[in-house]
Structures are given as structure tokens and as C-alpha cells.
Length: 289
Image (cartoon, rainbow, N blue to C red; front, side):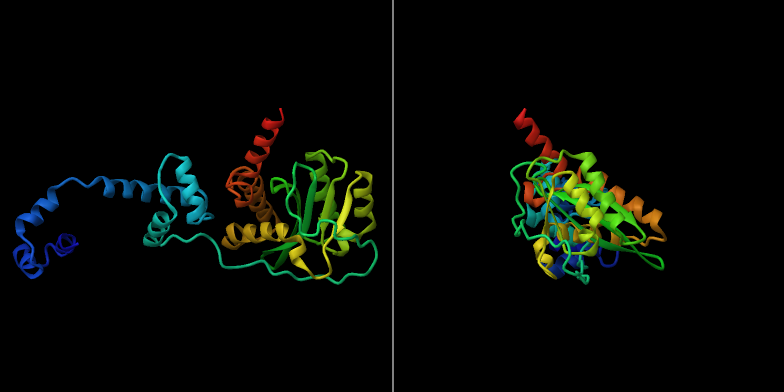
């Protein structure tokens, strides 16, 4: 540390005086200057460079825990504390800080289903439990609305729709995408809140036509659909809050990239062993083959 301090002031004071002030020898200082970097120092810079590259490649969405997994998978051995320290030194901080705020809508009593899911957010296989919800995304002059459907087995987003209005068509479009992408197996439950869109006759009949059993959260209880709320919070923290959308088209492009290119295919999910939803499902089908 003393030699490094002398080096930082080289040119401002004489080397001889600084060595005298710090009680070190000039020969020791010059030897320190000409020696090759140690293995530890060299590897530290390798890790630092890899962190910077990966952090920016992933659009600042990962903090230390997920970056450690990324680097280890790439053959760069490191630990959480090491990565956290290097990120702090570089001023790197994953997108975070704003949480999704739940605003329950007014509901009547028609078409309200029982809470069959009952906060059991695990599933033994695909297409056993789906969850759906709506959130808002700010754009210039107002908001657009995103409806999404998630398969709880892998946490994959299997259907989604974005529009300027929060209508029954919005949730129906997301539902139809999910049905096209997946197989509706006997016993499939689709859970949502008690929003008017999910209680609309068209939506209820669409579930009935696919032999899907509806389930609904208790009134005003967002934790009954926590998995979906968590996804929306991550979407906003890791993508939406870093943008400034001018219109629906810009928001759509951003949401498409996040869901289809990043979240489903790349993003590591702690619930499924720090791999992506697509990779988790691929492992499942390989085991079943």
C-alpha cells in the first residue's frame, strides 16, 4: 500500500523524500514497480473485466448473486462477496428500487371463483397451474396495460398482450396466446384476481371451452397472486423504469424483448435453480423422453 501511494504521487514529490517519509527503501520501491503483477492481482482484473462485460450485456439487470452464477458457468471462478466488492468499486448497481404498487379494482359478486390455488405456487409439471394478471406501464401522456399468463411450473410467460385500454379483450388476447402455445391438460387451473376483466362472461366462457378451472384471489389480497406480482416487479425494475416510452409501439418493443428474448430464455430464476424458464422446461422434457 505504501509503494502504491508513492506511485500515485510520483512527479509531485521526489521518490527519495517520499520513501523517507513512509519509512521504506528506494530499492524496495523500484523493485515493486518493475515486478510482474501477482496471479491474484491478474485474476482479480480478469474477474473485474468479466463483470463489466456481463453486467452491460445483461442491461444492468443482474446483481451480484446472478452475476456469480453467470461467471461461474463461463468458467470464471468467483464468489458473491468478491463480485459484490468489485461491483461496488466500479459503481455498478442492478436496476432496483421501485416496487409494483397494487391497486385493487372495485368488484361486484358475479363470476367470482374460489381461491383454488391458495398460494401453492409450485407445480409438478407444465400446464398444471397458470396465473394471470394486469399491470400498467407508463408512456408519454398516460399508461398502457400489460396482461400476462405464467406457467407456475417453470415461471415461463406463455401469453401476453399490451394495449392502450384495460379491457376484457386485453386478458382474452393474452389467454389465447397461452392456449396456442401450450396444451390445456385436464385439471389445469388458471388463477387471477377478481378484476372485472377476469369476471367477464367472454373470459369465463373461454376458460370453460378449454376445460380450464378458474381460481381467484381473495378481494384486495395481492399476495394470493404473488408469483405474477413478482414478475411484474422484475419487469419494471429491470426494463420499464430504465426507459422513457413515447407511445405504445415503443413500449411493445421493449416488453417483447424483455419477455421473449431475456426473461423466458436467458434470465436465471431462483425458484427453478438459477436457470431460465425455457432451459428448465427443456430439462423436464428430456427427462420424460
